[in-house]
Image: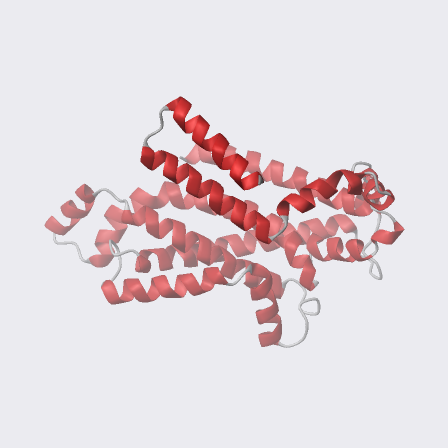
Length: 288
C-alpha cells in the first residue's frame, strides 16, 4: 500500500512538473527499487518501533550517557590492566593513520598508473591491475585485519598496531588506485600528444604529461583517505587492534557499567575528524 501511494504521488509530481516519459519512468523505477529493498529488511516496521524504543529505559540511559560523556576518563584514566593513558591510544591511532596513508597512497598511485590505459605498459597490464584492484576493494578493512592476523600468527590484539596498519594500507590502495586511475583516464590529450611527438618513452611521458595533471587529485584523495583512516581505526577495534578502536571495543563490552566512556570516545572521534578535515581544507587551499 505504501509503495502504491508513493508511486501515485510521484506520477502526480511528474505530471505537474511536465517531466518527460523517460524521466517519469526513471523516477518510478527508483521508488520501486527502494521500496522493494526496504521491504526485504522490514525498514518501515523498524521505523515504527523507534518511538517505543526511545521511551524504553535502556535506550534512554544510552542516550543520556552519550550526551553526557565522561571527559575525565579520556584525560586521566589508563587502559585497563596497563599503565598506558587513554589519550595515548589517540596518538597510536594518528600514527597508524599517517603510516597507512603514506604507504597506501603511494602504492595506490603506482597501481593507478598501471591500471589506466593512458599510462600503462599495455592493455593486458591495465586489465590485470584493474582486476587486482577490484579484489583489493572487495575485502573490507576488518577482513584484511583478520587475514593479516591469521597470516602473521596470533590474534589481531596480540599483534598490536601491525594488523591494523596493514589492513588500512590495503584499504587505501583500493580507494586511491580506483579514483586516481579514473582521473588519469580523463587527462587531456594535448600534453600526451606533445610528449609523443617529442619522442618521449613511457616513463618520460608519464612524468611530464600524466603526473602533473593528476597530482592535485592525488593530494586531494590522500587527504580524504587520511580522514577515512582515523574513522576506520575505530571500526577495526572490533577485532581488538591497538589504538582508540580497541579501547572503544572494550568499553562497549562494559556498557552495563555506564555509557559515559563510550560517549566520550565517540565525541572525541567527532572532534578529531573535524580538526583533520579543517587541516585538510587548509592544505588543499595552500597547495591546490
